[in-house]
Image 1 (cartoon, one colour):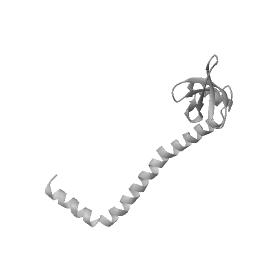
Image 2 (cartoon, one colour):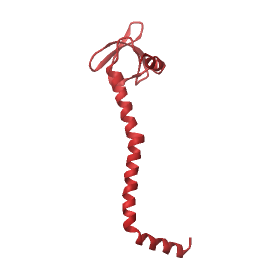
Image 3 (cartoon, helix red, strand yellow):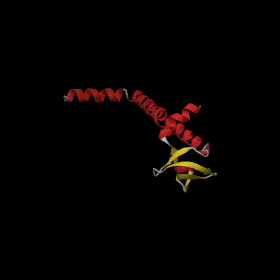
Image 4 (cartoon, one colour):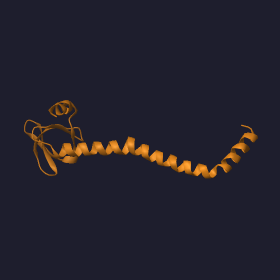
Length: 112
């Protein structure tokens, strides 16, 4: 870049500074709208689906815990789930640590 180009750009910026401020705020607003559409909104939707799944847990559903333990729901109450792991081995875990078993996901969609 030459010095003349830099001076012309500085002069153009000073002349259009009032117009540039408005376009700056429009760009900031557009950035927030795009972030909401592509990041926040899908995350909220996924969280609602997970909450619905956890509230509708029934005896016999196959699930996986956050720690990677696969099991079958033996009993549920308001906050916890009793999982049957193997044979007579059962553990009680919090509902927030329960996730959908990936191998059971297609079967759940077929029921709908």
